[in-house]
Image 1 (cartoon, rainbow over the protein chains, first blue to last red):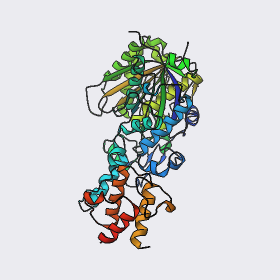
Image 2 (cartoon, each protein chain N blue to C red; image 1 turned 30 degrees about the vertical axis):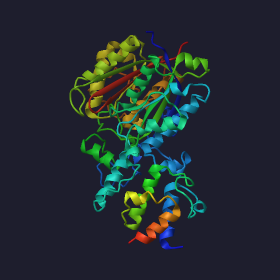
Image 3 (spheres, rainbow over the protein chains, first blue to last red; image 1 turned 90 degrees about the horizontal axis):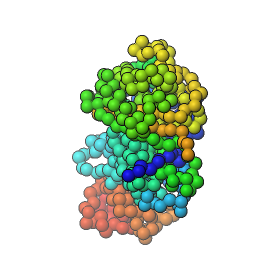
Image 4 (cartoon, rainbow over the protein chains, first blue to last red; image 1 turned 60 degrees about the vertical axis):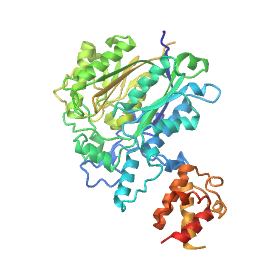
Length: 417
Length: 78
């Protein structure tokens, strides 16, 4: 069977850099850091006391109080960005068949704060089980996709992908596949995460995964810098409307870019450490190029996973060098996590948006916070350090890798009819 | 109005997001105040916590209005 073409027709973002796509892109283009001391709880006893939180978010601006109370923050974030994307795509009743519109969302954890609060309440009681009836439907990761479908009446395929930090990219790839196989006309996809809680920071601290640079939060996320010391936890969400090309054309939708390939692989090596030679990362990039049927030389920009951990950054770059050969030196490479922090299961969504916006604006967002070269990296590679670079981006690749050894890559191309 | 009635009304206003004027003794949680079955379960649980009582399921089924909640709790609250 002939596969259908899939295009991006709407975007939505709620990030540590800004609360819509325009603000987010403005932050990326200008190299702004989203890191600051934690406000969501008293972190004074934690090894890490800063994070990349969403700023100025007031639930009552988006939901009535009763509605907000029944949704964990990660679901609220999902609803806010889905709404921006649906409006951006001008999806209005009558220009789509609701039975053919899916929601495939990604979240690595789900309602972590809800889980934490309910368990603490029980532990503080006398043993009488007084769990809130909304506990489970607030906490489960898939409820985000459920809420979006209920609001708009989208009755197509509906589920959430869970693959830690690769979750949203898995959601995007699944959406791409369902549409190109003809199983849906439109899919609302993306991801959301809200794990800046005691359990989230404490858990990642215990893994020694987080930067502990408390005296300088805004320079803590420094991928590929010699003195990088771990990732900075972020929160937020990103949404993309993926649509079958003929469907988009028929309703006169604007088109941001085309999705041309999705790749997946596993490290099959360790629960949290990346394969030292980047074997999984190498395979996933080969897979995505094969899926899109393009040559490595056609790629202009790689938005890397690049979390600012000592090991992860090295193995990903090794893989890029192997897959791209001499073309690796002609690529722009950047880690926008240097600005946004690591949004875990939502990372793939906001980074896909960064890749798409780089195509649209012919501008590659930077890897900020570069102070000292690390001799582990070939200095002929262009990491787009510290300042955005103007460049025509015809094809952009977005990598995300998750604990468990899950690797995902997706390719976007400038749209040409 | 009794102290219990005041507290019951406050819980209902908070949990169901309704206006105080709507919370009349005759008002039904589901028909008048927009509660679904989960909201009703949550209300009963909040009453149990606030008044330190345990409301058996068969009796909880008979608490469908603001007035029924107040009289039940006035009778059973410790």
